[in-house]
Image 1 (spheres, rainbow, N blue to C red):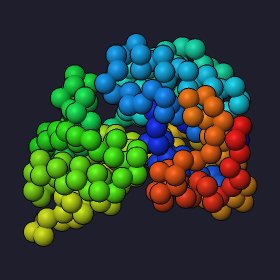
Image 2: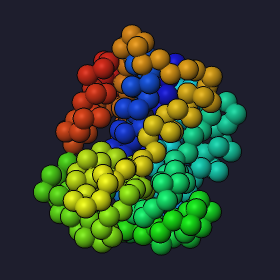
Image 3: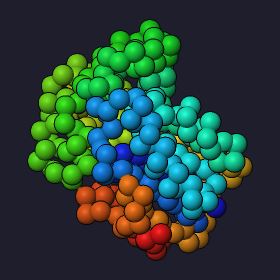
Length: 263
């Protein structure tokens, strides 16, 4: 079996690692767009065009399912991707985990890119799934870019700035950008309060990985032989995992669990 993932950058590592943990025998295709990132500031049409180009490049390798491992691309490009690729290739989008986080009763913080924070899309999610919880939208200036570059100092500064905007004592933090899942423990430590329970982080990686397997009728099998390979495409070009990607635990898992193939 083969699962492809699309994102502007290395935010797809979290979902790819979740697939690898669930099915060590699955081949993975990581199709990102370093030539065009970040996607957030682009127009909806431009985001759709770039996501579609990444998806087409991945589809040439005949995957069984495609994960759109990017919140921004899921908002703007998912209908177009599904119209072109389904039903032959199931397409799974990414949605911030507002619903399960709000079910804790709050208070909840939603960490997202500045472009997403306060957007009609995110506000609709909160209105529909907020369950009456106290929810604070937190713009995370520069965090996705810092994670993408693997700049530890910049990550620390961006996390600290967002934590300063987060109300003390939050019970749940929604990671509204897939890049943030790569530094989840740093986020948890930054928002931890000595007089409140440990905050729970709500990402999307595990859920989208499980949905991709369901769409192709495959059960999780963490004990399967670790035979899955890895193919990396950077703006359609065969490549290897970048140095920043390998600086994260998820990237090291992917690089170590199977052979890294360039095409």
